[in-house]
Length: 66
Image (cartoon, rainbow, N blue to C red; front, top):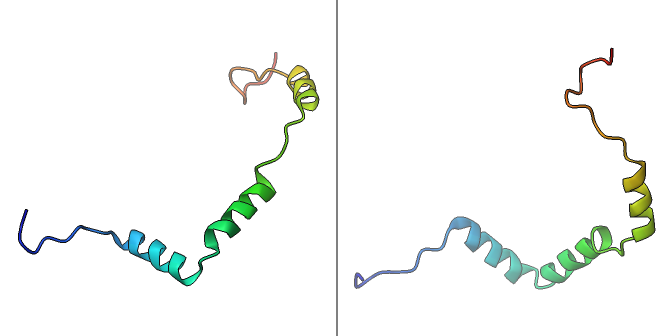
């Protein structure tokens, strides 16, 4: 290892660290945003009904049925 060796940190890593230093609540905001859109309970009954009602797709979508 060279005498003046410094560990490499990419521009992206430096930007993210700087952003987190400027906005300490950033990670909590991201978690709240994710919970708003993605972390929802799954309705198993509705999901089962949707699976049963699904029509299989034909092998070539653009081919007309003869």
